[in-house]
Image 1 (tube, one colour):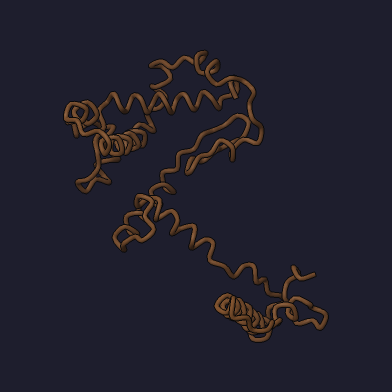
Image 2 (cartoon, rainbow, N blue to C red):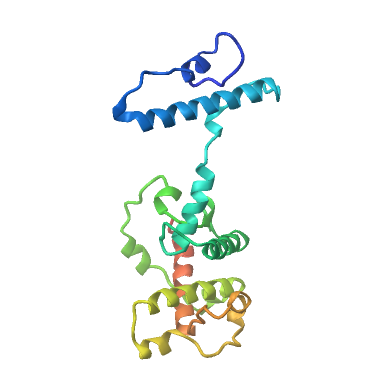
Length: 230
């Protein structure tokens, strides 16, 4: 009954329910004040939409900030899991999110269709849990030059991803030898085209071996969701 849309009909109990007002209790004074303020605002907003805007009904559940909180949650994660972020960090994170939308990494699953990788969780993509041991499957998959040749259209994106892997790894490795083995000095490589477009002096240009590892991992994932193995 109380989950029905708000309307002006006399029998609508939701408006009467939201108009409740319990006695004051010093133990939860602030909570009570916030609750009554919220319900009063919803009622006033509902009356305005129903009487002034001639809405046939009003859905109070739509009046919430979940999308905004979700967006700021992404900002905080991209800024290094910081709760308080600066305006410059918001702009940088927004640029990253827009890049993810324009260069979405999509896997074509034979069973689940197109799977867009944003925050990929296999439990969200698959309802059933496989009983086959993953190690046996991986050992039966062969990845060679022929398969990697098919990845040429997405090499710039995978190279950019490899650069981010190098960036995160170098934060933990305080070793000059490791640095030379992870970073490339050849900035004119065609695979670095996307990084060059985005670089303002802080991006890493990964070594070809690192790019090959990322390509093999991506190809392995493509194989795992192909029809013979999925």
